[in-house]
Amino acid sequence: MGIKNKDGETPGQILGWGPPWDSAEEEEEDEASREREWRQKLQGELEDEWQEVAGRLEDDASYETQEPESFSAWSDRLAQEHAQKCQQQHKAKGAFQPLRTKGSSLSWQRQEEEQRLFRERARAKEQELRESRARRAQERAPEAHRDPEPRTQHSKGAGRSGLWCFSDVPWPCPGGGDPEAMAAALVARGPPLEEQGALRRYLRVQQVCWHPDRFLQRFRSQIETWELGRVMGAVTALSQALNRHAEALK
Image (cartoon, rainbow, N blue to C red; front, side, top):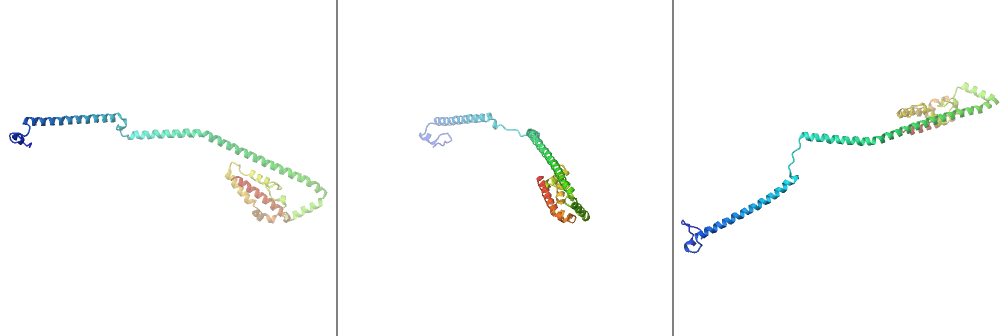
């Protein structure tokens, strides 16, 4: 019913059913005006909301776009961080350096003290051995004056045979004696305690030289039969003392 003819009239207007032409146009204009007002109002609301959101984003620094780091800035930053790390490590190392120096100094002093005590014990053993031999010589002297005949016969027998008695064996200390003292004398003749490697090699040579089997193999034919048991007992004790010294160095 709202379709217009060439004259601009609708069927309702011709039949007198609809509103007049002017009122229909006014109604359309009012509706279009209300539509425009609604759209303008809606657009205004949207613009206000957008401005509010955009303002918050502008105030937030986290939304700011950061510029990419250049290669020169990156290399400078790494160099600076490396220098700071090295400086911190150097400071930490310097803080512990006095402790290590103090500990090494104490260790060196302890080694010096042990060496001094060892040398003193070795000298004391040597002195004790010399005094013991002197006492035995003094004790045997009166017996030789009282009964010279057996000693003369024994000396002649030893001279004829040419074999070793106990005192003829080339002991580390003249005449033999305490195995510990003889072992200490051998150690004292070797390299100083500071040279641990050289001292161990020297002791290995002495262990081989004074090993009972090796000694018996080399010198059995040169020792008097009646002295063999005593000699081998002293050699065994000396070998054991050398083994203890070698174990102490490990």
